[in-house]
Length: 132
Image 1 (cartoon, rainbow, N blue to C red):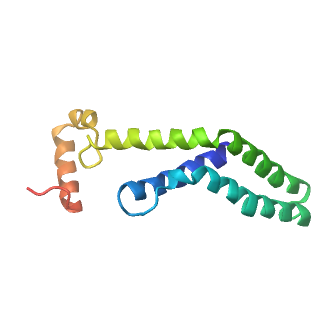
Image 2 (image 1 turned 90 degrees about the vertical axis):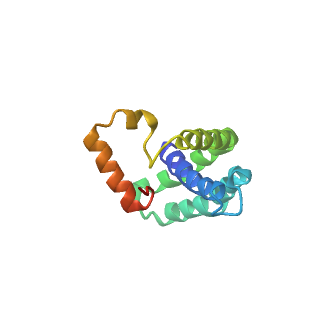
Image 3 (image 1 turned 120 degrees about the horizontal axis):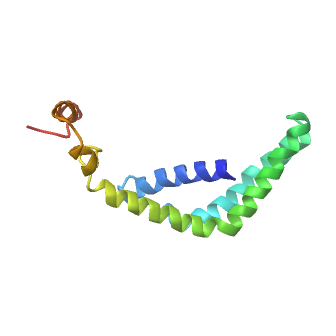
């Protein structure tokens, strides 16, 4: 469950970021919950069933199917609230990112030495994010 949840969140964040930055037309949060259930029912579980039938992993073959069914149940129970949490997490990150300069938070910048600041300026100039 934790592995699925981790990669599910990473994909969601990538797609939601693309939407929020106008690189994607559709807001993924609207259909994410149902889309994951569809993906379990039409791809993950049938694949796990075939792996179990083929016994491709020997005595462990049924584990894939059991984990797929357990993860689908967890998603069915908790997925809607998880989607809401992911949207809130993205908004929180975006709010804090707005205060960043070149990817550095204000507290990080305050802790820089003169040498650090010179290095960062050179780096930002190379990236085209700073013009003197």
